[in-house]
Length: 503
Ligand SMILES: [Zn+2]
Image (cartoon, rainbow, N blue to C red; front, side, top):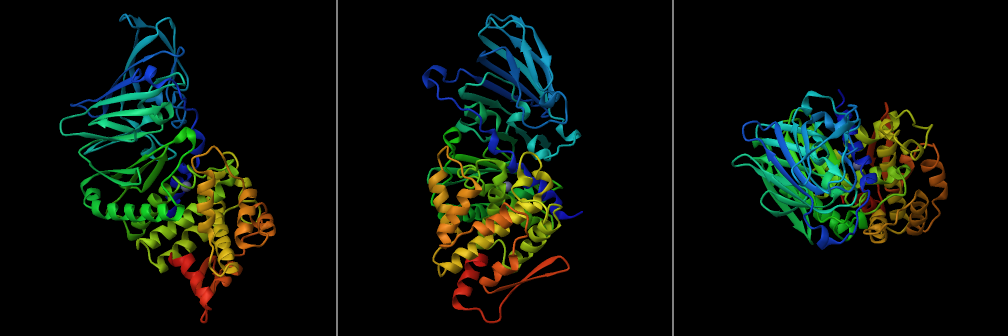
């Protein structure tokens, strides 16, 4: 099996995230503090059993679980819910009716404050998951992993400061995406923060990297993964510093998604996988996998991490702009890994060919569909090559064009910084036309024709022509992209090569 097949699903996960930051409500904080509480107990004798007891004021008469994921079951996430019980404020059991799609309608809604109790059985691994088990819930010898969507029953749409208290077996700790207040206790900002989340409870190892008030918290599960702790720390620190330096600051989400913390949960497992939920990353990989697999796992981490800037801070108007979000993020992922020494120049060229070019070339929309059109709606899963590969080569061509026309004084980095400044922390979103105009300004030349042909249009990207400006020879042999350096590059070309390949 092509080892990159798996990556496709991985990167796609990132696709579906932007739409999830629904509503956050700035309510009266004092009024609602801790009025919603979840007590979560992992059964000491049977870690496959999660007991949940939640207490809150009803905002309407429907209880529900996240509508993201588990679409393969008619009852969605409720497939794993057992023994749901709803009690009114006076201890009276309230009747309810189960509805399809993980919803329950309470028959008597006169009670304002209710307690709900239920169990989740950790049997998710018995089923197929389109995005992989890392986006659901699973058990390991060293603990349990749950996404918020897999275990939370909620009510209403306007809640803030939701408390979660965990009780775990002796010697277990809980690492979670929410703000931690004390060991095993957390506060979720709102319902989106509550459910677009993940936690690991067990004997795993936790460490965090902080920079300018932003925290990247790692939870490593499995002895072989823990043994690589220092490596992960170094890699994460290097990549984070590169991104902060490149963009000019820590991630800055929209007003509905202000975040200062992201969790990265890494567990060992046979198959490589990765998923982003909210602002958080869950990854599974084989610590004894091939060198190529190790590289891919680093790539996935660095790619998903960059989405905190290009995806969460800089946000597109629409999914048709995913060529920029995915392609340019992939370009900078390669640069970040090169920068920290996780990949050498030969490795970069190999990835450009085997992962990006060949998938771009073999995409069934190659030469027929535009990279924007295939990313509209839910079709994009079928066009990884056009969106990720095509997007990357558009980014690379534009980078070289700017560098070439400005004597290497400006580059695509300037666009990233400018867009981070303009869009980060705001509700504003960009379109492809905005990009076309900004890139024209940076290179002092209209990019209308390039965009008309290669971004809005279906004409394949002139990779060889772009690379030749940088003194690079690109040839296609048997459907493979071979990149070499001109025997005699000018000084400017050498500095452009450094900017594009070495950075
Ligand atoms: Zn992505």
